[in-house]
Amino acid sequence: MITNSFIERAKKYVRLSNDHDLSGIKCLFADDATYHSEYFGTYQGSDAIHAMMTSFFARFPDAHWEITEYRNNKQNGAEFTFVMTGTDISTGEPVRRHGLERIYFTSTGLIQHIAVCKPEQ
Image 1: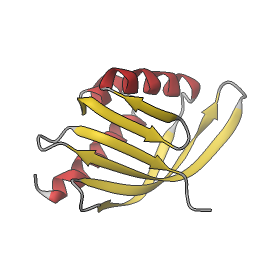
Image 2: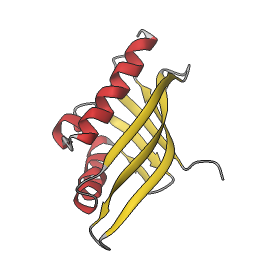
Image 3: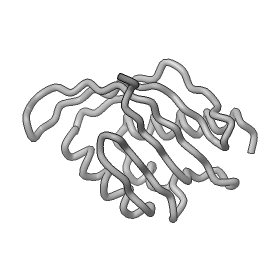
Image 4: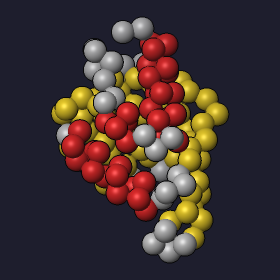
């Protein structure tokens, strides 16, 4: 797979996330994908990831990610720093989170793994 397509695929994932398009997002993941977030934990399999995202968007119904630059990570993927904003409906409080996200793809272009890291302190 050409490395520029990793960036295009990462952009598509972020665009679908900003649109809260859960069915579109689910189609991007390999069945045996994994997801690890320093904010929300580890999930294995596309069904578990989808359930986590469904819960996430219910809790943050206005979640939005701002990305300034996408980079190839030289390991079959792309990475980017982000600022996520939204409102936590469980508290009514606004949320603003910074982080680094790395997305790794299969040879067929599906998401194999996502790692979401908190910014270095």
